[in-house]
Image (cartoon, rainbow, N blue to C red):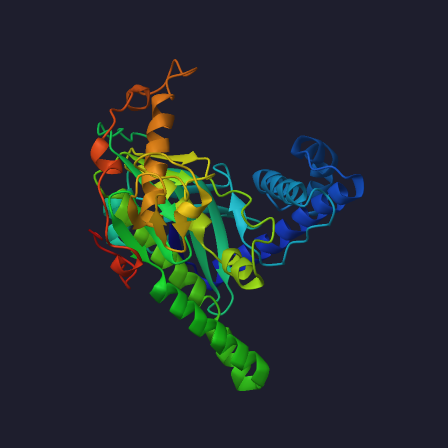
Amino acid sequence: MMLKLRATEEQKEALLRTMEAYSIAFNITSEWGFRNKQSNKFAAQEEVYYTIRERIPDLGASLVQTAIHCSCEALRGCRCRTKPLRRQHAAMRYSKKSIRIILAKGFASISTINGRIKVDYDFPDYFKNKYSSWSIYSCVISLRKASRDFYLGVVIRKSDVQATPDDRVLGIDRGLKNLVVTSDNEFFNAKRLNAIRGRYAYNRASLQAKGTRSAKRKLRKLAGKERRFIACTNHALSKRITESNNSFFVLEDLKGIRVKRVGSMKLSNAINVWPFHQFEKFLKYKANGLGKHVLFIDPRNTSITCSKCSNVHRLNRVRSIFKCRSCGLELNADLNASRNIAEMGRSLIGRLTVNQPNAPPVEGRTLEWDSGVAEGRCKCSSRGTVDTIVGKNCC
């Protein structure tokens, strides 16, 4: 949740100076960690904490510790092979000790090098009605350079989420042609998304080739629009799915799919810009907020296994059509894969009770097999999909 701070010029100056001091603390830690090939935050704090406090006495102890921890996380991410450096006015992470936020009252008490400042923020009525009772988990303060406005990024958590009593399972297959195909015969086509991304790519290439001052101004104006459009699409899609009458959403574990080159260069490039992880992240937090669960299964053979007779053959799938060589089932390949994912999810839920004596009641139940999900003949093929981001039942 992003909240715009209504800071005065004096408060903005204090926040800018705090960002600069925070960056110095970050860079001191990264210098020590890179030199000693060490990313342990406890060792780093023991070595550089007092050095930072002597150099920047006005920076609060809590902010110094947070800067050290952020630097160690960056060092761990690059395995100390490079020295991570922080921009002068990059976003700052705040702990509970260095910031106090009361969502219902609309103000924040923020620690700076000039002491505590009390800043109001814009809190929309939608947020106020929905999130006022939620607890603050973490905060980040960022600067938008173009407008010189500060924004407060707040991660909130709902502690009293009640698990849904329903036992319905929804299998979700993600792809390049269809963003999502669900096991209840719902298609979300990627045609519009790919068309808009192609238009942005063409415009960027044309403006970069021109290279004039007006072209560079246009590029700056276009910066971030494609990213925000994709995020908006994934938000709408994940919200539509999580609000369905299902308690468990099953996805393929696609971790590491971008490590190796797959097929042609065109296919590899398409996979590299595929926003599957963002959709997964949005789906998880929206489902958790509703007391629902997201599970992951092994993706092997989900596209070439028959959802009716379980026959596995690599020739069962030809492009977007699945035709079983054993029982003759013919339907859209992505829909068949989503039904296989749903079935594997049911098997996984049935094993959740093993080694989990303190599991919640919903996780402890064994689900009954729903034969109607895996049986039946679908004649939609690829022509049954829709051209909009939010689809409809295919059959």
